[in-house]
Image 1 (cartoon, rainbow, N blue to C red):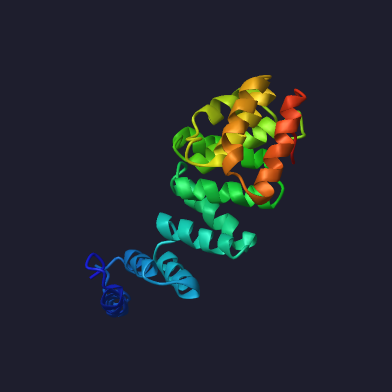
Image 2 (tube, one colour):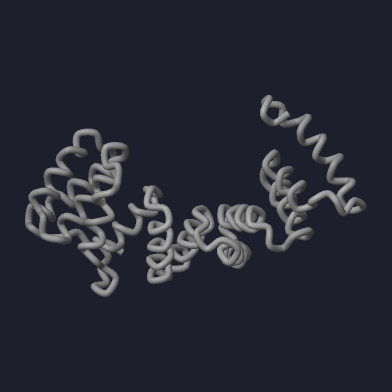
Length: 219
């Protein structure tokens, strides 16, 4: 049903299947409810993952997805232990690591955010958002102990800067942090023509700083 683009019949079938789970030890209750969750939204989806965890408290998908659901609702208190447990089950889980990093950012724990992003980018170097976030902090933060220009530059060099102007902005900041101001200006000047609004204003401010041979600083 799902492959055929018919989620409603699939959900009806799974709902019926779920009624047999409690009396049939052969059926995997966690998998049934986790699969149901894929076809649901909002609170109903969260409830399905909760039922899955009632059958198997170690179910990776349910731990991760329920944690991300709470994170989207800005409920850090409930999201954190779920994502932490998901990472106990699979320490390199891409989505759980990124969610945990977001929690650290939200709570102002930048050292933990950096540590988590480093783990994430080591396991998943193609996660551009994680690479970009980590490189930006390492290149621009006002805390000298948090900055690491060479690492920021190495990371930013791997970003697909042609796909998103924010990646080019990060690369320019990393270049400036390591003293390559002329190259930083070249990168900034390439993305300025297509920039708009507040991003354009930010780029112009950073260009002035690089013209004065000053690296950019942000919190």
